[in-house]
Amino acid sequence: MKKYKLIYFIIFFVIISENNYSQGWFNQNSGTVQDLHSVFFVNKDTGWIVGYWGTFQKTTNGGNNWTSGSKFTSHHLSSIFFLNEQLGWATTWYSEGEIFKTSDGGHTWNQQIIKTYPGFTSVQFINSDTGYATYGQVEDAKIYKSIDGGLNWNPVFVYSQYYVFRDVCFIDKNNGWVVGHGGKILNSTDGGSNWNIQESGTSDDLWAVYFINEETGWCVGTNGRILKTTDAGKVWISQQSPSSALLRDVRFINENTGWIVGDYMILKTTTGGEIWESYLGGGTVYMSIFFIDNSTGWIVGRRGKILKTIDGGIPVEMINFTSNILDNGIELKWSTATETNNKGFEIERKTEISDWQTIGFKEGNGTTTESQHYSFVDNLFGVSATKLSYRLKQIDYDGTFTYSNVIEIELSPTKFSLSQNYPNPFNPTTKIKYTIPTTPASLPLLGKEGIEGWLVTLKVYDILGNEVATLVNEYKSPGTYEVEFNSVGARHASSNTNVLPSGVYFYQLKAGDFIETKKMILLR
Image (cartoon, rainbow, N blue to C red):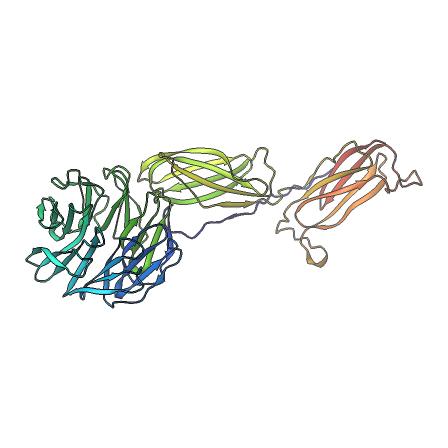
């Protein structure tokens, strides 16, 4: 019997969510196109952002939705700070320097102080009474302090020349630091009554400072400058930076893990700053970063950009994740641009009738800034499915993990097939399964009503070649089919009854030039 040799086809789809950033960070809709300068959260749900031209946004669901609050100034808002869900302060910069206070979560704001150009750059409160703000102007730069919740502000340090203090960080009621232009670092150990200038070792402008305890802190600034101290600032050590760009903000969650944001980049370290990895760019100037815990954080920047992470911004930057169809299975390929602490990838598969299962593991390359390429072949042994889904579970050495996008592969039948009937032997009925493959474009076969497919016949014969039943005689589109043969009611040439006798019978599938015949046994 002649069999038609068919070119095999498999249709597959790759579903990749739109995301220009590395794993772990995703976009949120800020509701504005204005530049955003500062972000602050008091818990995973409630947070605020401020920016140009009095832009003020608030969320109560972790940033899923940002809503505009009442506009309380038309000047550029430079920083925001909250003690709890109700009590907060905000500052303005560039046109006029103002400090505002809210006692109702940002619904209403009261102006507390106003100074001339350029204005205030940061504000922080230790409690509901005691707070600090940094200021710069043409004549001099000042550090301000309030001991009555902001009703009155008094300068506690004055630098009598054109200068800008950029950021303030107090870790308790006594110990605080201020950084500014020209590499200036000031430290107070008595709640701001007295300030000492610390030797930074650089003349680069410093834009942000952050301490995690009385001893350990970092500050960042122009030309990719990163400084660290482990003795409260007596000695500042310059750390190697992967960038020469302006670095605008820094935030640590412990002595090892921290982030820096700046012009067109985000940096992360898990080694206390000994190694900084640049793993995300996105073509945006990032202005401020805030983490509420080890895994949940936000970044804001130019033109209303907000990024959020819920897994600590795992720095494995996936370039692609694709699949290829092989004769012996499915080949998965993926590449990374950078990796940090990458233990490896678990490969997971799901079918339409099963949940996700781990089918393999590929060891990662730890920490590297060079592109890495991976591949894995799933031989599909024992798998019976028409639709497969694949994903990667990227695992860090500390056990944290994140999932890749999902690849879905829809398997169309690849060839004609006629299965052995079941049960066999049988009495009085048995089932026969057959498969019709995808019709090649070069063989457009049209059935009734223009349906593309094959004219299929499936017939049963006795041992002498007499036809006893026609089970199928119609056009069939690609797919797998099953029919039942009942020996009661079938016509037999040597008998006037409709009951077939015991014996050997044959069933034959025809479609185009494809023919296949199998044997079955009827036992009564």
